[in-house]
Image 1: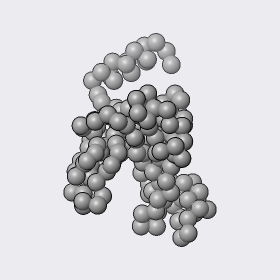
Image 2 (image 1 turned 90 degrees about the vertical axis):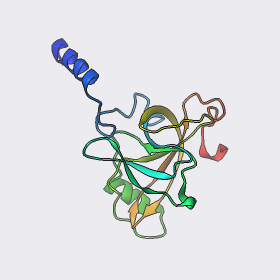
Image 3 (image 1 turned 45 degrees about the horizontal axis):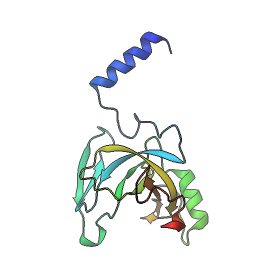
Amino acid sequence: MNKKTQRFKELLSTIFKSHPWHGVPAGPQAPAVVTCYIEIVPPGSVKLELDKTTGHLRIDRPQRFSSVSPTLYGFIPQTYCGDGIGKLANQHAKRKITKGDGDPLDICVLTEKEIVQGDLLLSARVIGGLLMVDKGEADDKIIAVLDADITFGHIKDLSEV
């Protein structure tokens, strides 16, 4: 890329917000440390979801009391839960899974800090994951800790939680 093109892209980035799914990189240290886009913060009683077309957060639905998010919840940019994830999940699930949910990979981020709003980016270290199935589709959750978190920062594996 020549210098003029690079400069033009830099100027555009000051005018327009990058789409959180497609316009933000997963991070230079991915998959160990990833950039996360956070949609919901605890104790979020409303499910917010990224509008795939506009890149804005929208209200999806009120949460039931039993499904309030206990962690920061969002996704890893430039990822996709498609057929490959579905096939991998099918190898470990006790029921047939043929595909992923078609969304970016979900992530739950542990931190001791109170973060009061979503629609933000952060860096998190991946420590594990959970195989989840929703309506017959893989909907796995990556588990991570906020990078350099005082309380959870030492954790390297899900077994340490």
